[in-house]
Length: 400
Ligand code: SAH
Image (cartoon, rainbow, N blue to C red; front, top):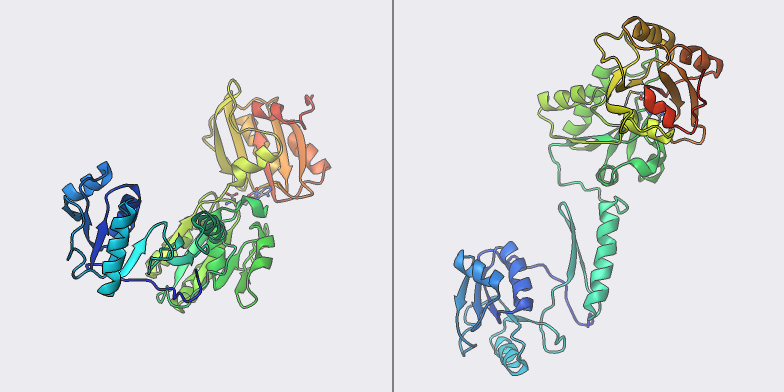
């Protein structure tokens, strides 16, 4: 069936297309024709409810009768789907005579045109022919669609973003499986990837060799690339017409300065998209078996930086406190919390390197956790969880 055929995409907007038949096949085809903006005439004594709606809303012209000579006059394309073989054959013969392409479902030998199964992702379209087997075409299409969605196919282009584009992509807590499909797809489109230390760097191995990777990884107390410089880099690359992915750890907006990066792009007139990520604030406790809320133990949680002095935090039961960063000043933080009314016996855990092979959890109470973490040699990246929910971790030792 593919032999002697010529794949083609038609621009149907405003052009007359005739559909003969008003059943389910016709309905499905009319939907696609409406999307293409075609000037549609349907010829059929009866219509499905959906086609009636489209006729009533003026999206198509309906001739409430059977097919007649001259109906194809002026049409660029014809679909026949009456379910009556003699009528469909007649339409096909008339179309042939007047040199109009004819879609004729279920009769590949007499049709002069076919509609492929199509996978569309953003501005990309892949059309599949199944060699006459519609199910096979649909399954292939679905596989292509899934691969496109997952960013497994090379989506980079040179023409789409003449003004450049920045995507601030939340990379999740470090494991490549926890990066979103949207994030992966944008990575597959990237010309430049500006990456953090805590981003899932293993996905960088999948990038094409000519994709530029800029490592601006920050280590505690050591900022190799200042934030202003990162902002400047993003804008500069985008202005050169590149697709820039800023791959960040966790979620861009959770203690990640994603807001500043977005503002810098906006101020420079650079189009910017923010792709949420799985934040370490929730996922890393989860990796250690700690739900941040739990019926009877915690009705809410706060996420704060452990980097700075804490004030005005919710106290008392039923609330979980999640500290990002600041492993080094954990002793001070714990003392501040106790001084501000937190119970020293509140369970606490430090979870290092969540989702890595070397993930490690230290448990204790608010009073003991800093000493225990130090004893264990705890180092960043780590998250501290304070609250009764820590008891739910398999690492909980009843800490006394
Ligand atoms: N935007 C990020 C947080 C950035 S601040 C997010 O939403 O996750 C960096 C801090 O995140 C680290 O100091 C550490 O406290 C925490 N962190 C990130 N990934 C982590 C991981 N895999 N294991 C433990 N802590 C992690």
